[in-house]
Amino acid sequence: MEVILLERIEKLGQMGDVVNVKPGFARNFLLPQKKALRASKDNLAFFEVQRAQLEAVNLKRRDEAQAVADKMAGLAVLMVRQAGESGQLYGSVSGKDVADAVKAAGYTVERRQVNLDNPIKTLGSYAVRVSLHPEVSVIVTVNVARSQEEAERAAAAAAAQAAAESDAADEVEAETEVGEVADEPAQD
Figure 1: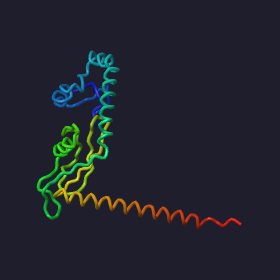
Figure 2: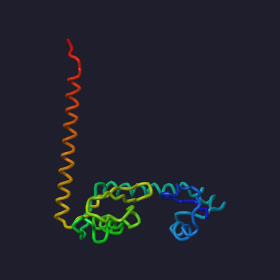
Figure 3: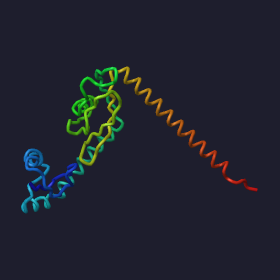
Figure 4: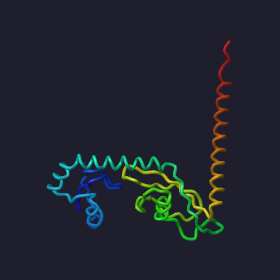
C-alpha cells in the first residue's frame, strides 16, 4: 500500500515521501497515528497545501525534543538485578525496564523510544540510545549491577581507568613533543 508520510519515520522516509508499506503496517500504525495518508491525487494535493503547517509543527516538536535531550545528556541510570557468579543476569533488562528507570529519573519516555537491539543479559555498563524525536536522540548510560554498592565501585573503577588512560595519553603526547624538539637541528 502506498502512503504519503506526514513526518520523518526512521527506516522509512522523510516527510512528504510516497513510500510503499505493508497494508497492515499502514492500517494499524501509520494511518491511526496520523503519521501518513493513503497515496491518492486528492491526498497529495491536500498534503502540499498543508506542508508548511506540518513542517512548522515538526520543527516545534524537534526543538522541544532537543531541549529535553540537552537536559538528559549524560544521564546514567542504575538497574539493580540478581546475577550469578559469572555476571549472567537471572532474566534480562529490556527496553521497558530502561524506560521505567528513565521515567523514575524524571523524564517522560515510552518503551518504544528506547532503542535496545538485544536485551541486556550481563552485568556492566551499557550505552542505550533513546529517540525523543525521529531527528533527535540521546545516549543514556545504563549500569546493571547486583547492588548499589557494587555499582558505585564499578563507577569508581571506570573513572580511575579513564583517568589512567588520560594520564597515559598525556605522557605519550609529552614524549612526542620532547622527541620532536630533540630531532630539530641546532641553530648556529
